[in-house]
Length: 203
Ligand SMILES: Cc1cc2nc3c(=O)[nH]c(=O)nc-3n(C[C@H](O)[C@H](O)[C@H](O)COP(=O)(O)OP(=O)(O)OC[C@H]3O[C@@H](n4cnc5c(N)ncnc54)[C@H](O)[C@@H]3O)c2cc1C
Image (cartoon, rainbow, N blue to C red; front, side):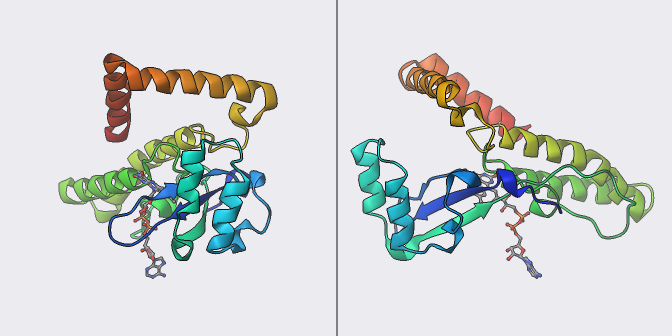
């Protein structure tokens, strides 16, 4: 699998045991210092605070309250499409073939879709084992890499996202804030938001 590190991102988690709030802060890798993957515990929390001076104090307080022992960096990466390969009795599914950024939150969903499809192909095949695996790969590769592309283009998970440009970024942020306020206040818009999300994740 070839990973495109120029668009890799970094997540920050602060978790505690029992009931907990899990906070993830992500941006493209080039927004972080080169050593961010080596930071641990309180250093991770300090970095989150340094990078968010204009965030609402209540949100930043959640960072401050984070458990340092449960705070760690996660490097996320995106795969690049591959051409179909000669089918053998070894195949790939899930992140092993189409790892993606969490832009749409569908990496695990797609892994499960692969598993269900592979199962159907194996059980329903009238042909050989290789025919069944070939049918699985022919269907999985297009939708898998479509999810990779959509995820990279969503929520600033691409380093080229307009959000990161000085002027366009402000406009994009203002547009996003207006949209999410509408989602919050207008029931029909909220329903559409949830329906669209569910439809995408189930497609
Ligand atoms: C921050 C973040 C947020 C995410 N949010 C979502 C979300 O909201 N919704 C969603 O659908 N997806 C989400 N995902 C993606 C999701 O976690 C992955 O797509 C999913 O876990 C992939 O499943 P998998 O079984 O293919 O691979 P994995 O979950 O990586 O499982 C592979 C397993 O193989 C094991 N393994 C590796 N090498 C070996 C070996 N040599 N021998 C034995 N075992 C081995 C590993 O330890 C691991 O347990 C998110 C990912 C990240 C990083």
